[in-house]
Image 1 (cartoon, rainbow, N blue to C red):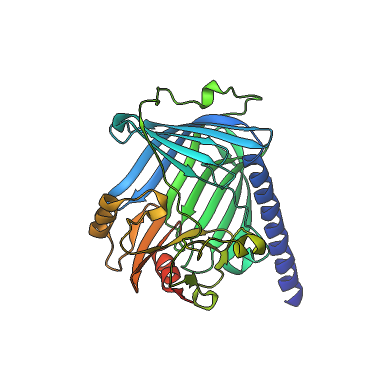
Image 2: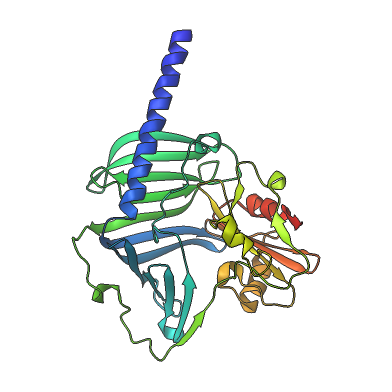
Length: 339
């Protein structure tokens, strides 16, 4: 019996190590390869499932990532194109003659890399290698990250056996329900992609351009808030991505944080009341009112895999947004207290 347990443990560890190697390969592929194709994106929304057809062009050249995504279906007033040029992300809405510009530091683009995968991951996710399987003409390696609790979502990955690019990705609840799925209908790996392929299909020079970025620091605040580690959900911690020297030169208290367990990433923004809240940098007053009307009974608003919660504390609004379950964004918001 002891020998069988040892063999089972060794086999499980080998499977986890193999899965880890595939994830490392996937992360490298997403940040080093050119690819283009057509994607199906399915999400679970409050009003029912949503299905989009997207065309994607992704280029990595001299270490710089460029990407263009066109919404092919559904078309209409909400139709959009999204263009990424290094850290600059632009959303073009041609019907409204409007362009939103933001800074985005995630290196992988629309298809998400799991760059925070580490030795701690196994404490909160069961990681496994399901072997090879056919997938719409490809041969895919199936990798699973199953959450060990209800505080985070899991991932199912179908990775191309040759390149490790994700041919299909699902985000699932702790109970196994699929809430988000991205899959390729077609995929090509060109050696080069021209600048013209990465430009919008229309002239946006006469559009209204708006840049929205939440500041890392807000000068003049008399009350300083921060997430308290002992109150955060298990496995989550604050990740600043700045040096102690940069923090020491800060022009004011930090009011934007990233909280993560290495796989799930959550944005926390602290704003003094009286300013228009910008949920995840793109929401305005009308959006905030709509979210309040459509919020669940616990005050969390859910759109597909993204949960949003805004808490009022001592004249401040603490907004938490991330691809995590509703209970997690609420718990993170409740962990943000005055120093």
